[in-house]
Length: 213
Image 1 (tube, one colour):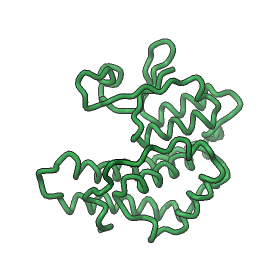
Image 2 (cartoon, helix red, strand yellow; image 1 turned 135 degrees about the vertical axis):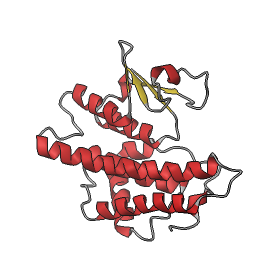
Image 3 (cartoon, one colour; image 1 turned 90 degrees about the vertical axis):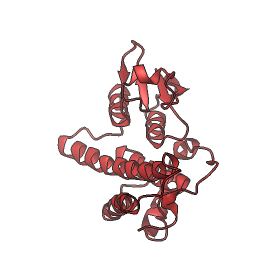
Image 4 (cartoon, helix red, strand yellow; image 1 turned 30 degrees about the vertical axis):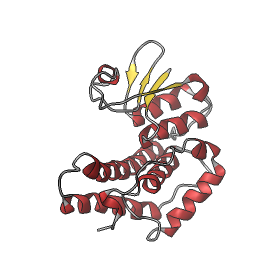
């Protein structure tokens, strides 16, 4: 299988982390993709030109990260990162979607500065995104996943917090020390988390990094 990805993508990081936990990383070749490049084949593999996308051995393509992780979980055999029992499964998938929403809001803050460098950042839009991040993090403080278990929720939360640390669109650590402690414990228990960390970005000074609202 081929994973179309980018080192900086937190959603691709989720997939790489899940594949490592499920013992499938040796069956996946990671291939770099540049979604903004009109010549990149990602545009035919995923009409949305978004990563990650997983090309199966028979040529079929799966996207997005949630679908890919569900597929990997299905083919892994004995190991699993998603509960099988119906109620637990959909509770976990819903909470994992919350982590994805934090990532979506974080990326929109980053893109506000990157894609509109000639315009003044639109404050209400940034505040709206920061509000999503803050409410999402508050929700996680009320029901933290077990830091000693790597499953769909801990994968999503750890990658969301990792992206917040990496791109710095929102200064979360002073307000959420319980989450800072959680991600440190999770990283200590899951070696694949550190191994999937992206390199230091050339510039972390984005419009959202100055304040939280």
